[in-house]
Length: 232
Image 1: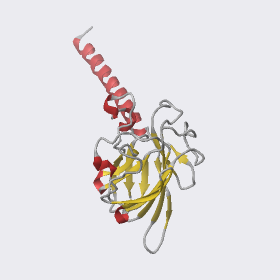
Image 2 (image 1 turned 180 degrees about the vertical axis):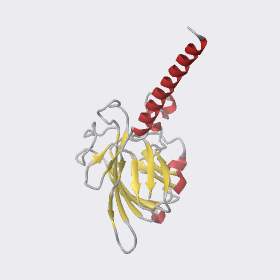
Image 3 (image 1 turned 135 degrees about the vertical axis):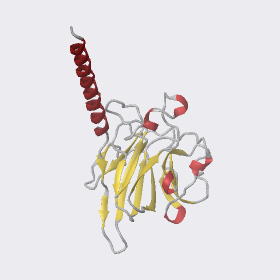
Image 4 (image 1 turned 90 degrees about the vertical axis):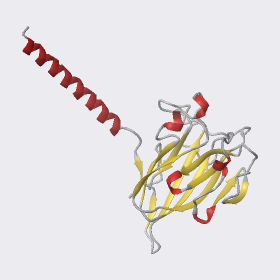
């Protein structure tokens, strides 16, 4: 076979491989959790957003049923397995988190503190009783292992520890979405969005069981223990 013909085959083969790789990359980037828009009410004081989330120890289905996870409720009241939330700019966000998981050991006392919320506080109800914790008071709901997860948005200075249920709880949620008939704590707080931007948010309590130091798996996966706030 002439050199020119062989060179042409090599070039064609290379272009085909590049096309297949490009197709895979585009498909990979376009797949993932949906963007969820919670209920928004327009008022004279600006948009009021009602963001309802829940956390559970095991998602209970799908390719990773044993992974710990968040879920978000959309404007129609449906629970969506996603951690990508769209919020309006310059809005007041009223957050409710139903927390169904047991507590873990805090690696850093900073994550036990309520920060960045309106009033510098968060309200806790459920098996912990009814309490309000304000910045910079450390969370001390049930001792050193008080928090199951955190809702933290570093770029906004927000950190809210989510109180864990007892490890001896009998009525534990084992499959999402959880219902309030299962043992849980409810945490409420508010914060303000600013100008349009995409903010990374994260749980900082290592809860990736089976991964080194608990920091892999769900801790690094959008739709489970980390996500994005799209402020538009």
